[in-house]
Image (cartoon, rainbow, N blue to C red; front, side, top):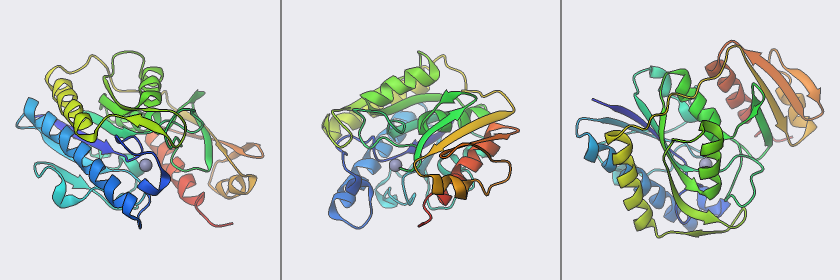
Length: 276
Ligand SMILES: [Zn+2]
């Protein structure tokens, strides 16, 4: 029996291009969350096509973590929703019971060009370096899975996410490109139905013929550098134990292992939404 953790974000879903589509309280969002739910369901169906005994957790990892519509999700999965969660987007993986992870609806890391809605956790983080490597959510979340021995076996998003996947993991991690971004707020996308068909097939394939890729691992202890967009936010984040100020906007910290470092990054993300 395979146990699969499927993390679903919204920015990399087919058809989504604008901040409003990820922001509750408007009709655009109500449509986009259905597209997100459908892509999640397609992946669940694909996993179960390949292994009818698989257990699938769908983790809603965008914004409020309450986007996927529970009653519209494939009923054979369970849904992890709501926040705050101890390990943010990857909370649950720390159970240590999962065999594989799949990331869909992924967006590019902060600063990527031709990359719809690219950012890293929040618009206020300009860069995150882990042991010297610049990673966005894809690398950071994959390293969280890796810390619990879980390999990432499928990633979907736009062409910048496909390129980022190769950069983070090297060759071998399968991807589904559902759209081609032509800027930060514009893309040419395949039809959502086509995207869902491809995601279902790719998820089945990733479970049937597990790609030859190991978990993404990080050497301990872990040193992280975070560059924020405002010195005032660096002042705030500097209140956390063990922060070293590198320059006006950059902080460095070390933790014994990656989950501890990831939790600090989540805390910085929360602090960065403080009105100043
Ligand atoms: Zn998101």
